[in-house]
Image (cartoon, helix red, strand yellow):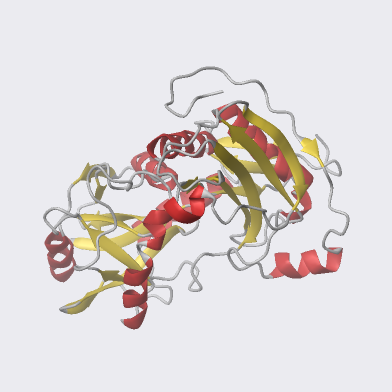
Length: 385
């Protein structure tokens, strides 16, 4: 196991005790959810839990019926927000098998987040074992192949459960994984969304928790999200905390800019930007498609001026939940601009479309996987091995 300060060692293999739900969802109820899954609205029959204490390390790994957690009102997570989470998807392929996309990157980011929040780390092989354990038991909840952009969204999380009001790293922690059938994150599907460019709210600061995936970052974004909604926008893009000039990211997505000369640029990782798994994948897939990709600082003025002159032809956002979502309008307190060519019904630019298709084809197993990015989680018994 690895200690809270990240100094340690090799972990024993986790063995999961399995307790099956006594009253799982009926086949009809499950079919109704899979027919229209939404996002994060319904959950599978089971969940994974494991405990950690300073004395025992990780123990009590189990798959058990999905249900409420019992925590003390004095649990550190409720008072000091000592918690982290991850998000990834399980995809059904045509042969019935179920695969995750680059889950080792989620495991590595989970460890980095744990270190930043003074939580114990979960070794990569155990993180992946927890995903396999849950998906194996709840495999019937993975939407069928050919049902559009559907998947089983997996949410690993960790929180401090010790009942103590001292401000220090907790000595008792809970790790869990839940799963939720998912459709598109935005109601628009692949159609362009509107983005609010905030000049008042800051997502993260240098030296803060911006590069960690922790709930506090998202809670702090909700006021700006409400402001975006009031201005007819779907999401927010934040500027840097120091100069209030450089584009960083959205509250839940990284952002890319497509230039008329074929370049694609995205803000460089600064320590206050979350290193997205989809972001990293887009950089590689775009290069495969022949585009020149750049990671550098991009100002709000460069974006707006580039849209006005046509130098920036497309803008899109990337994330596990949102996949690749075109941005069709940017608005701010002083005005707004449409982005790209809206002459087509979908309003999605050709570069965004080509990268999006390449990513989805890979995730759903429709094209070869030369980099070994896919990891099999389950192979149902009713399909041939």
